[in-house]
Length: 67
Image (cartoon, rainbow, N blue to C red; front, side, top):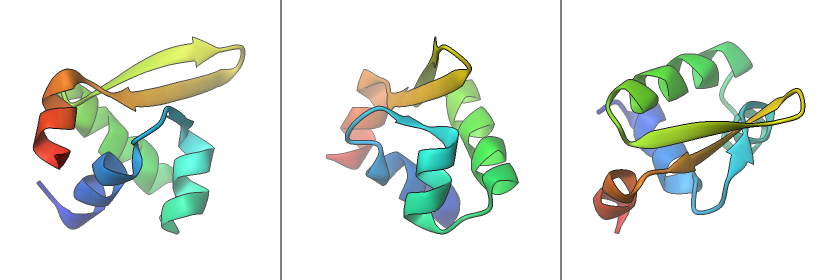
């Protein structure tokens, strides 16, 4: 796993939107979106809708990698 993806996964101790993750990590929005897509494909992150926002949280597998 790349450093950017690891930073995002570690930061998701609470559900956050893509833009919140970008602001908190200092990564570009497009970069965060790309990393989140890869993390979802790997089964480490799940996403849900909150109106127009997409909220991301770790799966149990993602939690196990961080702790």
